[in-house]
Image (cartoon, rainbow over all chains, first blue to last red; front, side):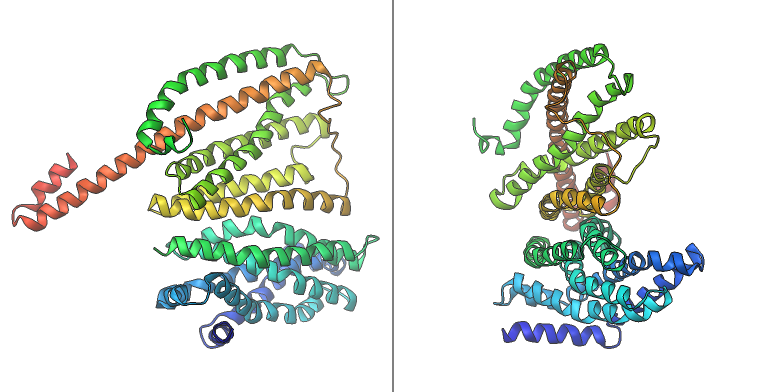
Length: 222
Length: 261
């Protein structure tokens, strides 16, 4: 347990310090949201209708962008080999690393959501709905994305391939995230059903992600 | 003759060489029968002659899922049983599955134009099959990204199994997503409500396509085994050239030219 908490603390510290790149994700998120009005025009009514979808897409791309740092930096300086050889099960170590990544790179996206909601003309209810769905859904993005990051760690130029592999896996999360926020904002339909499924997706990926990532790391790092 | 006997690539090559002509012949015969039956099947009272696209479209769609299932079993063979031919089977199946998926999308699109007035509709079925196609392409990209075949195999096996878990999720989620947004304007004929004049050609075609897959898959596996042998021979030759040039203080170019020849 101390080993895992040490790993989490170390990863968060590295992510938040210079060159860590956790906050670059938020900057990217902001940039994507700012680009949207240029693409669809400054029509506030339209923007508020598209708002949840834009925020979800931005958060998805931002979390994808920061994912390649999950194992890559550790692989380059050799600490990934140490983690693999240590007595801590690799699955738990992967889960700890993903949790640290989510705390450092995922949570800032959710904190930034209300501010970005203002740019998209979203009211209080809509913004909090999107933030809540992101809070429930981004763990799934991180933990499924971890599989792609583990597959790509042994490849040269793995970043682009990782995006191709991970994006199809994130589609269900995107569907239910946007569906739940839409239901909370306009929908005659209940918020509960898609939101529960979103939480379920996060829980499932919490279980599957570490095992798949550990398997590909074990096989990939001969 | 069990699965483990086939672990020896040489035995597999010998056996598949004997089986392949028969499989190919059976495929051609069944495809001929199926296509003839499809062509002579009556027109649908609503869809007219366009219903005949179904006889090509449905087997393709069915096989696009089936091939992923085959790859998943092969991936288990790679990761769990370390069967030497499992990764060959998985690698050979991916482009074939991608082709079936692409053909399913294409024929569906051509069928959709006269029926729904559009080539593409963001409907549950179409979207989930499109995602399946993307996953096939990603898998093929992964196979090509790693130089060492056995390491590529393990990475691809993990992704195949993850994708297999995700497929039903995608299917159901898109169904719900559609009921949330707008119901699809699709008329889907359930298998049981299909008239015999349609059902029999469809089943014949489905079996014919399955045989087609098995034939192509065996042939592709043979190619893959031979490709790996060529690769191993090239590696041996390269290392021999390097070794001999290290040992002999003689001409390195001579060896290199020998290697090239």
